[in-house]
Image (tube, rainbow, N blue to C red; front, side):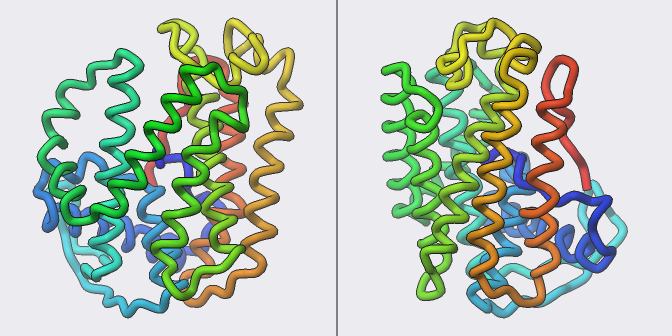
Length: 286
């Protein structure tokens, strides 16, 4: 996941904002302890959302402590390290490795990032071999689909299936069809919105893009002009599917954070990507 599953801060209660930031900071501290300072380069809001979702769903005990760091010396609430947080930290690094491998296949170097994260990714893969195997299978399927010139749904299927399996794995005995459906649809959402965000760059570099393969526009501006309503419908349909599945999942203390992200955050990111004039959408900071 690549930073698109984020809360919508203007619609968050202060309590939920502080709680989400505590999960983000807790994950960042866990990454440092697991794999060193440079591993923190891979931390993103998507992984923090997973931490909030699965700590609540599984009922894993958590403790809020006060900590600071180099970037934020003033102490603030942080979720202390838990076994689940360590597992999500490893997943985060494994997905970062998958993204780097995909970029390399597309001809991008990302030399500094690969050098910074290489050893950390290998360590995470050793500690979570089942997650590493899932990611490897997904990447192989995804590259095969892209090389065959797959259209939208076929191209998104490998990553959507990966996230379905990840949600099943982290939910454990609390898994359900609804939980796995959320994972599947979020995977498809991330794949689609990342492709829309990278559209012009993919065209410029001659890389595969499922929306260009499907609609054929030579620029994102042309794609929006010709197919804007269809793009909005595709993305909104995914969000509605997530909402419908989420209604069947019982949440606890983190309900506000999770609901805000799935109800408002996903739509906010869609608007940011689809409404931009040029370039890539601006990454948010909470």
